[in-house]
Length: 182
Image (cartoon, rainbow, N blue to C red; front, side, top):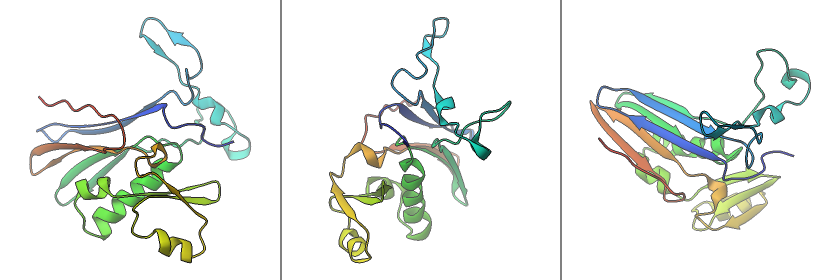
């Protein structure tokens, strides 16, 4: 049935002045994950094993199921940037749009994160209201379904990095975000 919801994953990105950068996604997959609580740690185990199917994606010793988690670290001439976003199978689609805007169109990272997005889902192209290419995508034959720009289906990017020895962090307005600076 594919990814089931949008509120079970948290993106984490961090950087320090020494150049250490980390991108991570924490996910229980479904509400309450596997429903197995680990009292010593105070957490619930995920149920990512539900992602096993058959063939090359069959369960087996040492194997991991196909999944949507896609934390990313980007190296460039300016430094290193960690990026992460929740959003089921939209994670790769969201990160692709950020990379296209920064690496191809030359936009700065903050503008790329803030921009309206699209997302492919169930044969439709979900497009944020105000997206400058919405009508062009429809004219190309896509089944375009408009969504509010802040819809959870478009993920919520967090980023942190180190550029010329200076750490930075940024986040998307689409989700609740916590920043910590030391």
